[in-house]
Amino acid sequence: MQNHMGHTLSQKLIATHLAGDGGDVSPGQVAEVWPGDLVEVTVDLVLSNDVTAPIAIREFAKLGVDRVFDPDKVVMVADHFAPNKDIKSAEQCLAMREFARAQCLPHYFDVGRMGIEHVLLPEQGLVTPGDVVVGADSHTCTYGALGAFATGMGSTDIAVAMATGRTWMRVPETIRIVYYGQLRPWVGGKDLILHTIGEIGVSGAVYKAIEFAGPAADDLSMAGRFTMSNMAVEAGAKAGLFAVDDTTRSYVDARTSRPYSVYEPDADASYAREVEIDVSLIEPQVAFPHLPENVRSVTEASDVWIDQVVIGSCTNGRLEDLRVAAEVLRGRQVHTDVRCIIIPGTQQVYLDALEEGLVETFVRAGAVVSTPTCGPCLGGHMGVLAAGERAVSTTNRNFRGRMGHPESEVYLAGPAVAAASAVKGRIVGPREVLH
Image (cartoon, rainbow, N blue to C red; front, side, top):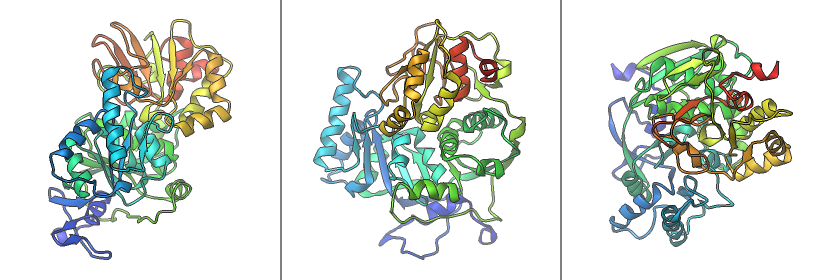
């Protein structure tokens, strides 16, 4: 019966990367994989950061190999605790820096060149459609927005991938989510993915891939798509994918000349589940503590007073996100009881924001603008919360203690709600500020 079924996007991407005993799958060779299959695949990129790379480096040393399989395909980014917040983080970065130099890795990104890894790699043209990417970071699934199969793995698996250019995986089933209708003002990719996680739950896609589809998904910018693929893991997914279209091609072609392959799901592909969502019914969304599935519309979030706002991260640290925040903050002041921290996703985003006058808008509004870093998202630095404090954040997780003290609270939202809340001192939508 399987021979008569079509293939999902994930199945096609994995099938084209099957590693045979005698070498890789030859070009044009027809291969098929099915959900549940255990397969070995070749990888196009292996990623790690200053938290996960030191572990992978130690495991790599135990494998008895001297060199990584391909220096061009091993990427390391100092972004979580960089610029270094303390001695331990400095030592983590030093271990990664020394390994990158010894291995002559051209894609090692340190302070001054770096950015938040999942904003940086697409921007640098390092991920293209049709790739298989593995990273020692759960939000590696961000690159599914480019029509790549990208997934997070543990540091030990990453060590093996660095050495061999291969990894193993179980082929996932796929959930197809179809978005239709017209987006309301101030509603973007963050609101769609929060609403979706609210619908299917944080365990709704465990060890499955998600295909984001439908006319409303097709209308999203790349920034919106990256945001949605980024948070697929918050529903438990291994990957969150968009099919490649003209929007994808124009983004990729502007950043790399590397040839790439485009795959589409078959019309008769078999899905574990299909969900339809009318986006015209969705208001700006807020995920209340302490789970990304605890979602309400912003109009249901009245009288939640806050102490801090963070706008940035691998979820919403792109130029488009900063433009939205600036539109709300321009000519207004951050509430006197609120600390507003804005973190561009990369040096390029920072530079573009400077040239567009966005940074001046933020500073005049009473916000602080940071160098690119993951920083506060994981409770690392640059905005850790004390007991009893509340933050609205454009990051991707609001687990207990995620951004600091276990008795602090994190409310997830898009940049429009975050900026509006910074002005009012409580959770509100942008309309309440811009009326």
